[in-house]
Image (cartoon, rainbow, N blue to C red; front, side, top):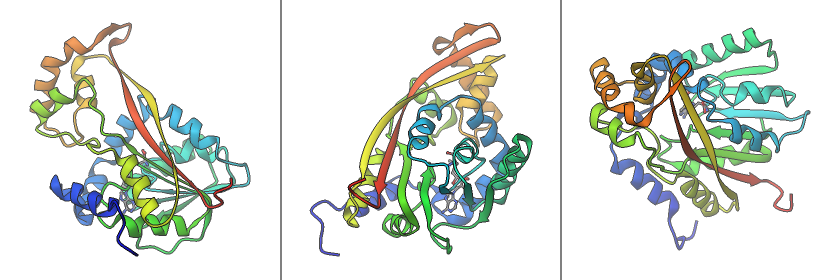
Length: 273
Ligand SMILES: C[S@@+](CC[C@H](N)C(=O)[O-])C[C@H]1O[C@@H](n2cnc3c(N)ncnc32)[C@H](O)[C@@H]1O
C-alpha cells in the first residue's frame, strides 16, 4: 500500500493505545463478556437505543438475504433482523453471550440462526449478502485486517456501527464515582470510514440520533444501569446519590432520557448501488 495522505489505520491504533484498556487483550475481553453476558443483556434490551439503527439496517435487507452479525452479543440486532432475512449467522467470541441469544431466540420462536463461536478475524466464514459489525470492533488494533476480512465476506452490503464519542449528561458523574467511562470516546465512524478508504473502499457515513429512555423503580436501579457493568456496589450507590437532578418522576418510579449519536458506515460492493 502506498503511503496515504491521512493514515487513519495508524491513528486508530494510536488512539486505542493512548487509553490503555486491559480489554484490548483478547483473553481479558472474552473473560469480561463471559462474566457479564446476562447483565449486558438486561442493560441492552431495556432502553430502546437501537430503534433507528435497526430501521436503517432493515432498509438495506431483502427477504432472501443471508446476514452475518459479527460480535452478535445477545442479539440486540440479530434477533429483530432475523425476521427480515432468510438466515442470520451469529458470530461471537463469547459462548455465554451466544447462549443468552439462543435462549431468547427459542423463547421468541426464531429458528433461522446459525451459531459460530469464533474470534474475528481469525475464522473462516462463507460470504454473506449483508455483513454487520455493531459495537464490536473496539479492540481491533489491526483494523485494516479486520475490515478487509469483513469486506471479503460481504456479497452486497457491509454495515459498521459504532459510537461518535458523545458526552451524555451523566458522563461526568459516572467518571467521578465509578472512575471510568466505558462508552466510545472516539468518533469511531470517522475512523472506520477512513480506514475503509485507506484499503480502497469508499463508504457512506451517517450519524443517527437514538433516544435512550431508562425507567427504574428506584434511583439506585437507574444508577446500576448507567454505571459500567464492572462498577462496584459502592460506586453505584455514590452515583445514585447525585443522579436526581437528571431524573423526572414517572408512574413506575423515575425516568432518565437522553440522546445518543450513533455512527453508521455503509459500504456497497457495487458502488453504483
Ligand atoms: C458491546 S457488545 C455488542 C453486541 C451487539 N452487537 C450489540 O450491539 O448489542 C460486543 C460483542 O462483540 C463481541 N466481540 C468483540 N470482539 C470480538 C471478536 N474479535 N470476535 C468475536 N466477537 C467479538 C463480544 O464478545 C461482545 O459480545
